Image (tube, rainbow, N blue to C red; front, side, top):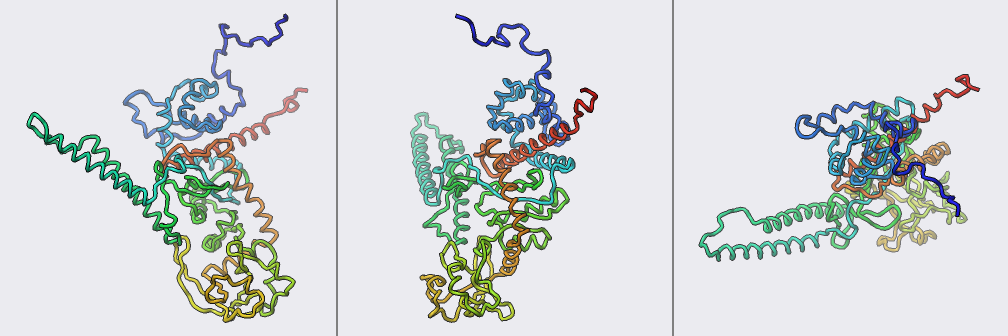
Length: 531
């Protein structure tokens, strides 16, 4: 039988298996070379200041460990133990660390040690891309996502559960203390323990009880916030994760609930670079928009001309604050008026909407009644007109709480809705007064003006770029870098882990753009005189 199998190119017993130089094993245009070159351009002095320099073994330079983390994330490797293995077994990783062998504990500690320095490196990479013309700050897109915390969905505390646990630990502590006292009194040598320090098992019980009380304070604080938002803590109590108390049980983007964090990012529209990154442990992320834009302006000295975000961010406060900053805000209102033509908007609101158009009147998706946008406001007379032309005059001003903030609402109520053919579609059955009311706050006029602007074709065209600009960075971080669950626990450490991921995203975009620029500048064979 013929030996038709492929021959070994490099048999194991071959004397000369590898090139004499490690450098010869990595191609000239390999991405790891560009990464190393990029890291060489940065001044690592602030990082070096954290090392003593004279005590212990010589430390591995922070540039090497930062490069290892960033290169590992490019290959969806974030585990410190896996990075330790690759640094000793994969040729490209060995080339990057130049044969050094950092252990997993060193890598893990390095990941969380340099908070301010990491922010500076992040800003520096963005500035390099900005100076190279790879990104433009003219248009920003802001959004948030969900990333699972390092905590089981079912390992959570409520105030009731934690009270039972504290009581059980207290009982266990008292019983153990009583047993310890009995044993101490029954000593045969006639001596009693005069040491005031508790035995280790009792001290541990005391520490656990103190820890639970600290977590209970967090549970009660969240319950208080939920109560202000109209949620009854007794019926729907707050749940604090046991292993990562800073995380929160939140709805997933794809459905269901999990113990999550809420990372947010602002990406520019030209090259897709992330220019601002943060992590929230709240469901609502709209309050983070304007501070993020202000941070970009303060960091890079340039204000964006336009900011795009989804409907969750189109609050009256955000619209007004961005208008004051002369930044064009592209975000459709969640109201029905922003979704299509509204027959209630007519030249003479005192006249009823034709019956043929009644089925086209906007309906609120929550309570299934006619939307507030069916009511036209007359600023001169300070009244609303309903779709039947009836007036809703001003009734009173009251204070309400939305997302924990107190706001003043002007209420307008119809004198009578009796005999109206649209009453069944307009007045909710649980409305005790039997008359429709419309509320108006300080930002209502601002939202109406914004809704009119978002209907313009040019606004729609600009907003059409939002999904790609805002969602692509999250898709890259989750799918390519593999960050779907945080490794670290605690909000501050999670913020650093997210910043490392956003930095990695920017670094590899910059490596890609640098490689493309060099390919354009490389002379062709014809230009070199070779035919």
